[in-house]
Amino acid sequence: MFPKEEASNLIAFFESKGFGILKYEIKEYSMIIRLKRIPWAFIVYRNKKGEKRLVLPKGISADYRETIYKLWNEYNGKKLKGYHLFVDGSYRDGRAAYGVVCIKDGKIVKTLSGSFKLQGGTRNVAGEIQGVLKALEWSAKNGIKEICLHYDYEGLANWINGTWKAKIPLTQGYVKRMKELSQTVKIHWIKEKAHSGSVYNEMADVLARKALDSN
Image (cartoon, rainbow, N blue to C red; front, side, top):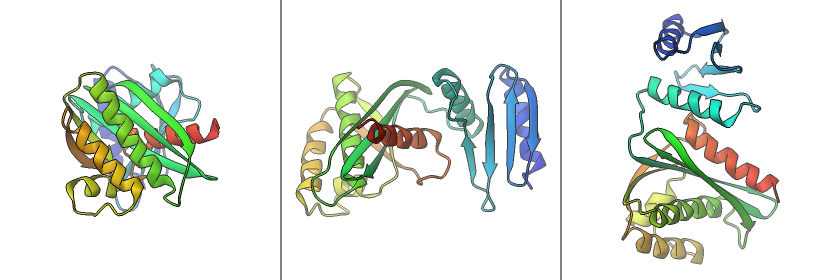
């Protein structure tokens, strides 16, 4: 059963932020919540391992989505001060895509996405790589000197720090370009566990998949 203590904590937190609870329902592993100031219900899910995940409806507006994401991160102790960029990639039918969510002090300031025809057999790794490059290029273009880069594929950082050797043209080109970009932008690498409830990581994943749908 979804922990009653957690349900009470969630209700108290939202009310402390001026978002009264209009209605809620507790199920086996989840809590369905509708707030007075937001006309969409959303789900807080907690599995047997204790991992928490926020699930928002597909039709929710961008403004309400951002509000709930910000509240959820604050509830979990993640205020995201400074610049935080979340990247993800996707692949389908010979095309790769990337999604990037750019956060400044807890607020979404930019999203980036795109897709391209894939050369070779690297699949979504190519999208992940392109996402990192686009994130750094956007930061450099906007004069941002320091960022926290959130990623879920370990190779993205390991090729750069030398733990993994770049053996193919794709990864070799990635390392070369990152060396250039890192001269102007300082990077703090933050590993996210894929599909574990990191809301902005999942948003980047959705952006990448939508980019594939548009082509």
